[in-house]
Image (cartoon, rainbow, N blue to C red; front, side, top):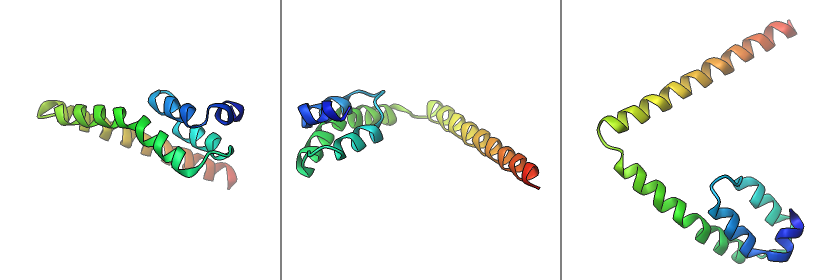
Length: 98
């Protein structure tokens, strides 16, 4: 992947930032391993993230009333499920160590 970034540099970062399924961290690490300058990276990242930012803001603004409550409920359910899962895992790990 670093060869790709070395060859195409800022354009690779720009395209990678436009793809919603591409890991933000992997792109940043790969760009950091190349000789890409800070301003090129900043330019490509800012421009590449702009469409997603506008879309997320628009969709978030559309959530009103019952839709907002539904999304909040789902997020709360997810957070509680993750908390229970982590607590159970910590409990099991402590039981196996003791």
